[in-house]
Image (cartoon, rainbow over all chains, first blue to last red):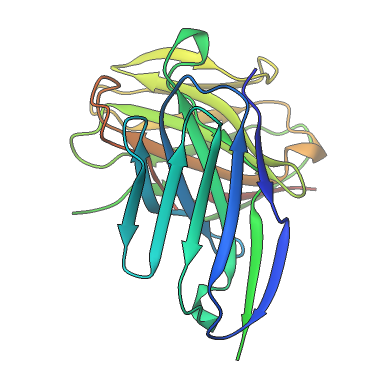
Length: 115
Length: 115
């Protein structure tokens, strides 16, 4: 069974720091990996999608890498801002079997960026 | 382009009652997914509908059910509500499963409180 782990569970940093959020998964048979952001009580906003054949994706100050063989992904946030404060979730999509179509989520990293 | 829309946004029900939640996917998306996010438990997969059929189901009792209509919108029904059903219910949509380079888009959710 696919398990997704995110480290750290929480992170509190001053504005301007460069951050690294980690995600690991146990089964490398994935279609893709998606990073989401969730503000308190709200839905999920997709940040980056990395296909299994890709190594990284970039969007603005965000960069996500994927090492499928080792079951790891990293979300890098450059020059953090208070508006980046949210919970960041990593999710993988299996590419086979009865679990096809569903996402497996980590528990998230709760990020606080203070001015 | 309109995103995934869910209704209602908030709902308060009494234990034992029944509830119906609604979701409209992004235009052109044929798959709809339902997730439950209870406090402290992370995102739990409930149901996946594609082309009007249930394709996969998470580990939830039969009182959780749903359907997908010809216009691809979906309903989630929960019978005999229990206090632990209190959660944020999130709907997501995506295009055909074989389109690998497409992720999931989530709605803003329905906050269900059972008293």
